[in-house]
Amino acid sequence: MNKRTAGFLSLITFTLLALAYFLHLNKWVELPSPLLATVRWLFIASIVTYAIFKRSLTTWILTSMVIGIEIGMDFPTFSQNLKVLSNIFLRLVKTIIAPILFATLVVGIAGHSNLKQVGRMGWKSIVYFEVVTTLALIIGLVVINVTGAGRGIEVPPGLHETLPDVKPQGWQEVILHIFPENFVKSIYHGDVLPIVIFSVIFGIALAMVRPDKRKPMLEFSESLAEVMFKFTNIIMYFAPFGVGAAIAVTVGHLGLDILGNLFRLLLDLYLALTIFMLIVLLPVALIIKIPIINFIKAVSEPVSIAFATTSSESALPKAMENMEKFGVPGKIVSFVLPTGYTFNLDGTTLYLSLASIFVAQAAGIDLSFGEQIVMGLTLMLTSKGVAGVPRASLVILLGTAASFNLPLWPIMAILGIDELMDMARTSVNVIGNTLASCVVARWEGEFDDEKAKNFIPD
Image (cartoon, rainbow, N blue to C red; front, side, top):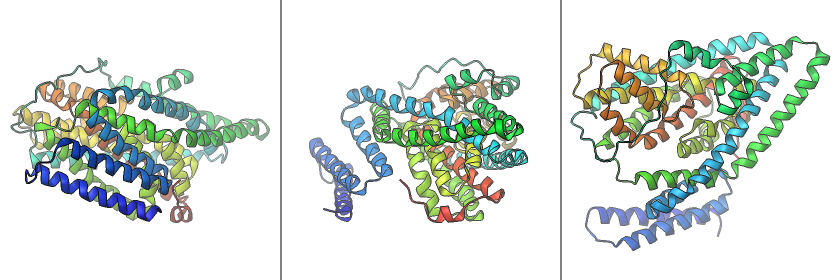
């Protein structure tokens, strides 16, 4: 058997699985549950065989997601024990972030001694971020107003969970959070932006000292960056286990029938995110003339990791590595990507605009378009100060609902499907930020077209 035969076998088993479920769901043929489970496991066996021949990490990650879904469906109680695997993966990834950001930023700034470029990258990134997130906000508002998913909704029982207690942050706290109080403390808490600010200032300071004093630290940073990229490659071998476990835990916890009356909201989010990618991100990619197919290959692995773990942080190291291979200079990647995780949350912004109007619709409150814009802008601004807060989007929604006199019960209902929604918005956040690094690189005239055309995923 070769790769082509294995792929053909997977296609056949998938077709049989789809046909069996089509006949069963339409009640044309009553198929016993053990038979359906057998067909599903045969399909899994076929794609595992294909993954063995394909020998691609991305293929194994996608395969592990399918296996995780099946484990969550068939063994929901057991699946909750797998959370330890996903937590191990996330912990390992978090160990990479601070050293890789520090090393790549210091090398990018001090290695070229071009301090003016740092300032240029900063304002170009912010301009691009704000334009794109505003478009995401508008698309979210348009979709939810057209579909009216919140009108007439009934809250399914059992969706009331406890949200984390989070102290509301004013604009002073948001600004203070950007600047590091203690570098080690920022590493401990996983605060990406303070790490970036410290690394940028350190790189600028290093660029200003004499060459003989600069060289040892620069060589150390270059060596550290190389080691951390190898470190990333080693950890990524564990990614299929961590990703599969994360999916199994989610499906086992929520089930596949949890959506009920909230299914329309979920569809709205996925529809709106798809529209955003097609009419905003795709044209941007075409305008800056990057090879679309190779870009999809470059982001597929970090996006699949983000989708399964619902964590942008887990995708950051691989996204940085792949963007460098794709032709974006390391100094731009290490600046734009982590900064974008605070200022360029396209998926989260779209979700917040959609969910806030959903809450008003569910409560029977008609908001004017002007009021909707004000609410959306409020959400967009407040979302930039809560990176790292568990279920941060829901915490933001609660605060905004109180400010605009909206009831809280629709937000508690959304909590039941938040994990499924988080998968989509986190994936779009990663896509948006990787594309942003390409935009800034092209804007700076440093995008390597040859690397992009010849990109080959691991």
